[in-house]
Length: 122
Image (cartoon, rainbow, N blue to C red):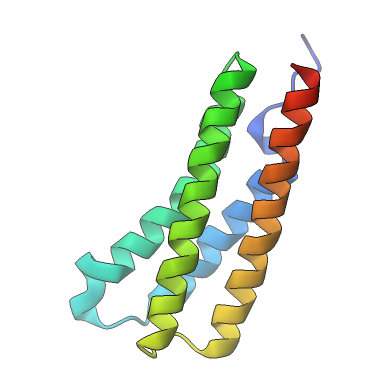
């Protein structure tokens, strides 16, 4: 079992960690009154992506892993929605929105790919 891969070996996990960092930097300048509103929601959604990938990777069953990957996909969709709302409220610049959304698209594709690869190996 020496070659067991952990979440740290997954490229999608590293990419989603990067998105968390970007989101925290972006939301630093959100209005103070949004701290318990969209700021905390957006951060929670972002953190949920790598967290669920990590928790899934730690599962012994393929079914368990795939379940957590589905949750990560849900969080990615939530984050996308919140980024669009933040842009509409002029909390973030359109170019920042575009960067995050394209990163999210890439992360989603990677998660889908991972789910597919789990299917074939089960």
